[in-house]
Amino acid sequence: MTLSIIVAASENNVIGVNNHLPWHLPVDMKYFKDTTMGKPIVMGRKSFEELGKVLPGRPNIMITRQKDYAAQGLYIVPSLEAGIEKAKTFGTEEIFITGGGEIFKMALSIVDRLYLTRVHAVVEGDTYFPDFDPRGWKLVKNERHEKDEKHAHAMTFQVWERER
Image (cartoon, rainbow, N blue to C red; front, side, top):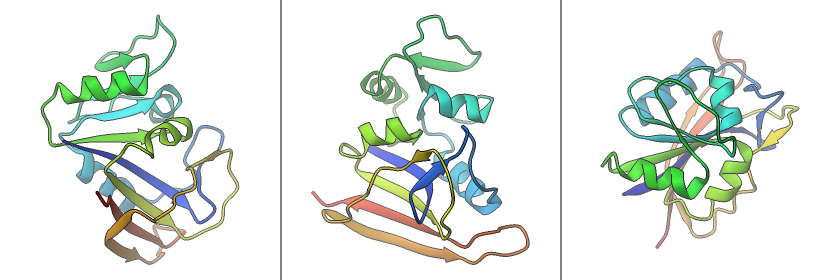
């Protein structure tokens, strides 16, 4: 079982502003969907609320300390560890941690793979991806996409695997 993070982060590691993505990048949203489809996704409450709905085609697991939180089609757990354990019950080969900033901070040291969409821009925000030190990791994918009429920023899809 592979434990992975999937995230889009600017050059200055911004991933959010006012609980929203700071950009609209359709090719990245398609990449996220195609990569995570059929596999459990584990996220914090704020990330789920930013989505506003359960993402179809994959088990959605939300971490919150709010004991009375309920949402149709959502598995609710009290911690990252409980979220990973719940995700394992689905028997997939890969589990995705999808945010937000605090969850990424807890997960970065334990994941096996990092799907990092590096958005080639410096943007203002209030939520950040933790500093990523590539030592001990191997870059296995590095695919650049230029900005165009639908994408205000160029981006690079990177996949990093932890060297064991």
